[in-house]
Image: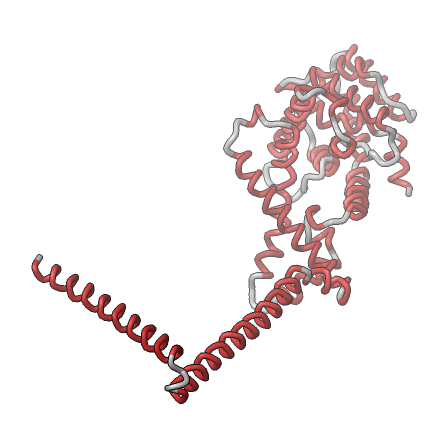
Amino acid sequence: MQLEIEIRCNIIISDINKIIIMYRLMHHQKFIFQNRRILPFTYTCIRYKIQIQQKKKIEKRRISNIKEYWFNKYINYIKNYDKVMEKRFPKTMHVYRIFSIGTKDFIQDTKKFIQIKTKNIDTLTTDELQLSYTVHKDIVKLFPVLLISALPFTNYIIFPLAYYFPRYLLTSHYWTLQQKLEFMLLDHKKRLKHNRPLFRCMQAELHNIKDHKLKLKWSGIIACLGSGTHPNVKDIIACSELFANEPFSLNNLKRKHIKELLGIHNISSWKLFKRKKLKERSILIKRMDQALQREGGTTTMSNDAIRWALSFRGVNPANMSLESMRNWLEQWFIISNTVNENTLSLLLHCPILLAYNHPTNWILIYS
């Protein structure tokens, strides 16, 4: 305690001595200025020293102003760097923008996908169900590209390849609006190639139906599809029993029938547990239908949402009016509302029953 008091006293004394010295210097300087005629040399030295100090201050200010000017200019250049690069290298900046914006969107959707996994699946909205379907496929598709690009020097090869082959190496986050429409139509056309073989499989099962009334109704439906029209929704619902048991329940479908059904729903036929994959898809469609109707039906859907819904269910939405798209989807909902756990196979066959002879599909097939 005593040592601490002594240290503080020494500090106070040293400060007092400094103040006294400063006071003396100021007093001497004042005395010299008052008697500059008597002490001209001393006065001249002090004045010269003051002038040098003032020049140094001016020089410092000038240097600081120059530094500030160049610093501000550099900051403005950094802020407008994108514009400068876009003028000099427009194609390079276009590619950069595609990858930067696409990656941000992909990361954002992946975060949403992780959050969706923690929610109750029966309470998900239509957008969340759609996101859970698309993001899983996007992650599987983009993962090899990201993995290869992480290796040294491979990004100089993989990114140009991805830019020139976006349909195969990139997800929809990186596509332009024109590419999204073009690739959607190409994928839809690929699925439509399975329509006729699947219809033939459905037609071939007519003789296996034992119930005479159901056989008569089903022959009428097949006749409608074969003549270029579509059956009535009520007639389709009347034959729903065929999709709960033989011949069209998931457990009774033949191998070729399953293969064509996978193709029409854009599911790889190389995957294991094919029947399980079809059942999962039918449950997803059923949940989407319920969510859409819970949120207000077709009247509350945006144009993009209703186009995606039609394409997902087997109809080419290109060149269709909004009213015709809504009418078609309403017919789908009528059938979907009658489907239960036993007749889920009916939803999987609705792309044939409701869209096999749709004009936009035929135009796309033969275009």
